[in-house]
Image (cartoon, rainbow, N blue to C red; front, top):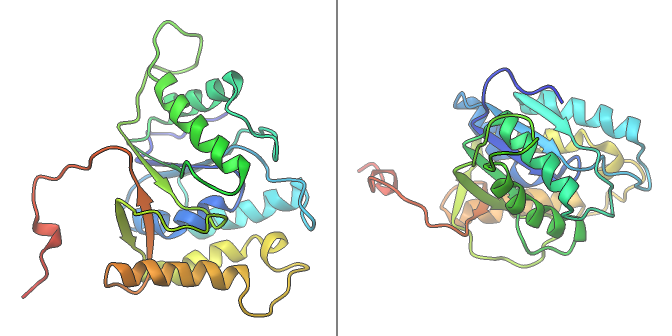
Length: 238
């Protein structure tokens, strides 16, 4: 793994290619517009799927990476469909945290219909702790990412209460363009009768935008309390 040239501000952990785009593609785009360094690490290559291949998924990921203007991206090549929070997987992901040194982690929510997503959430929590260990043969210096937020998956058909909702109104079209890069998952061999998976993703973003009096949004959860030194961000111009 080639680490980024400088520490990341935000690192998204995605179980499969396209999970980052689906769940927090708008947050990534907004963050990049703000000048933040944003990376994505996928745990698996997402294959096999009915219309995909490792080579095709890699090309789709490269196109989505360009659309998102990501600072850095890497794939750990852990087994798709068989993902488990093993000690070896924990070590690999903790090493990524130590070498990229993000201030914020965006990781899968701990409750999900997809077993890989549930395993990924547990793996992220454990790897975050392991990343700070000393007297270990893991690469890089000990590091504990200070902030972790959890994102919702398209497989999740419940609506937990988020800790915050990010306004992605200005980048919704670019988010959807990044998702459309994954043609094998959303276009090839898929019915285009309404509502498609793309319709569902777009409409969920509209719902979360409505929840915060904006056009489009992306929810994030937190197990830890969020702090602020001012209430000014919640004041509207008079």
